[in-house]
Image 1 (cartoon, one colour):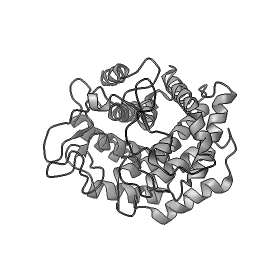
Image 2 (image 1 turned 60 degrees about the vertical axis):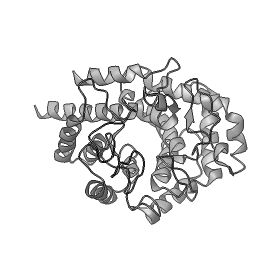
Image 3 (image 1 turned 60 degrees about the horizontal axis):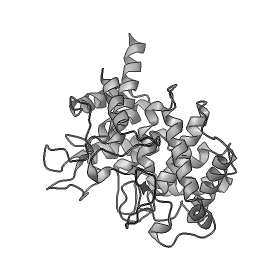
Image 4 (image 1 turned 180 degrees about the vertical axis):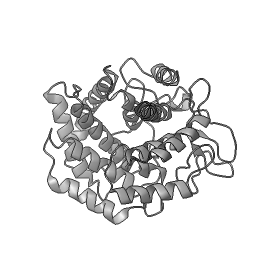
Length: 336
């Protein structure tokens, strides 16, 4: 059974602390906040505790570096390393190398995931300290002025204003506003920025794979805007083995842009979110073509080749594939 195979692959990447390595490859034997939050989405509605345990580990990580959060709820970070780090060792400690840590989308996603867990009845908040951390993260996003701040974005690259980062923060703040104090204008500022920027991702990118997050899982754009984003992504970025992140992407580019495997299931999940079952099934067929026999879905196919890169399996890609498989199975059961 494919679902069991995919879950087994995820289990192999699960660490004893409850988080996940991004991949079993040497290059990716780290813990990214973003990757963990996407990786545990299959467990959001399951009876197991993998979802909340991953978040509890991330809460403990935030507590370890609470002194840094405290500083930057009042003083905007000047240097990249001053931001809440996006990537950690498997022991959940900061890594002293230069990295594009200004990733507001990771903080927005973490907050969103907490709210979603609470909504389905999971015990996300263990004590008052956890709730305090959530409150401080709200003030952190306020201090960095997420709605107009240039961050490194989902792909950890050049600093510019990214619609996908702003949208993640909007979704996160909306998700936890019943749990802590969220100034109302803090959400409005982000929504206004999105209205100004979309359907572009940034000043240099007219479209980007990262924008799919605004449809799934966040649902922070209108139906019309969702279809505009999907039209751009499918016509400009879709390729044979997946979806390129953006035009002229140089990562693993050997004559053309690398094709990211999770692009296909992500598109399927977006169409499913919008109720377009035919398109959801179409992207499931495309996804099936790139699932290896062992279920270890790679990060990407190297641009201009039919060769996957070494970051295989990528937990995030396995998770997205599992989620789409689950949606398609539910659809087929309801039809039969």
